[in-house]
Length: 231
Ligand SMILES: N[C@@H](CCC(=O)N[C@@H](CS)C(=O)NCC(=O)O)C(=O)O
Image (cartoon, rainbow, N blue to C red):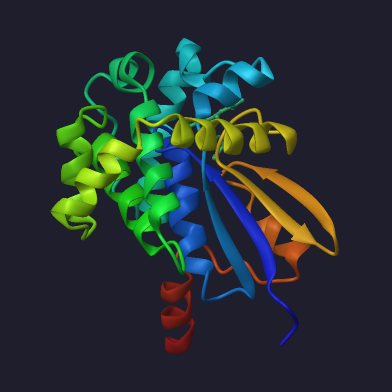
């Protein structure tokens, strides 16, 4: 087997399309010959740094996104449900505290990123499935608890996520994303033959698989294997 190709996935839990990409990449971790690196970052900083604006601010795009996300939830098998007040959840409340918390989880975790994966998923579930807050300390604690973290660990993370060290780490991964050319999320950076190839969106997996020399088996590869086995 040739050495694994590194894929960096830049995401923010405020972004529903990032949730789709995140679940797909986690599913393909064991299907493709890849080493997936989770790169939690701050979408607000990417928007500002690249001079972009959130697509939801254009009224017709906002309407389109509602239809699109409802279809994609089924297609990707991800329980996406927009919050009752998306503007409040995404723009007024935002995800800075949540992303700092995830960054703190990443800093404390050794030997893999299982906790980062689980905490990120629980935070997405709160904002993008259950219409729950992701800004208050109690909300972050509840998500971490659901992800399997213990009480003292959570208390330590809550202190850590307000430190200048964690704030700087989140800024620095956001800066890395901008240097790769980010203007939004999700962004995947595939390291192929010494070159970093950037892909934007949860709708580019087919092309990405082609560049990686892997097969795209749809958003649910395990499902694909089962249904082809029946033929
Ligand atoms: N076509 C992409 C859209 C992804 C998308 O709209 N991402 C938002 C955040 S949820 C973004 O950062 N958009 C920036 C832009 O579209 O310029 C997909 O299907 O994943």
